[in-house]
Image (cartoon, one colour):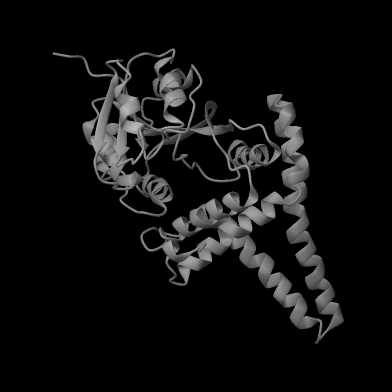
Length: 331
């Protein structure tokens, strides 16, 4: 009887002919070799499937769907085809460092009770905008400013845990957020390790950054109907509600009482500037601690990116919360 692999690495892909080769090569070169690599071709119209068939490594399994089913359904196809104890999910535009799987295994070995292990992202692009987007995420993750949130393209789960929870959530928007909340609701044990790094592409222009954040915010709002409220998951929408309320309060009282309006103005300034100053200071600490001095180039953008990016997230959240459909957004 053939021995089952320890890991099943699942990669859904749709029209990824430009990215899939470096992704495959990076995983086949892993220092930990006991894995199967499952690519789920989600009805690609390009040469993705053909390129994958050209790889002759026996660890590669191709699930070739002729119709586009979406990422969540494709991940589930990979889960059901998998044989490993641990299911690792990433994307076809990611590049895995040599010790990526080894680092994940070490976390499960240190704590066998863990249900899931997540990691962090590192930017492939070295331009200032890409680095700024990555730096902001790393600050949120590494300094614990958001709860144990498993990144969609750098997460590993016990297969039995995913099956118990019903597989990957079949939600067009917010599947990653929903799964995170499902894990917390069911008191599953999660570990986020900053040593578990995978490289990915970040948008190089502002519009795609804002568009992505808008959809992520809308995706989070899609989970509200199913899960209990937890402030940690909604800290960004709550922050902007407070900020906008403070601005409105100040404007209204300009016509009623200058003293009250002055108080509102001070409150608004504190709400706006304290988080930005904190993020800039944390950026410098993170850069020095990790010796990633190339990220210094992103600091000018960090002066305005956090508020613009997170405001787009907030708008997406509110857009869906009031009953609008994400597919009609950003037209």
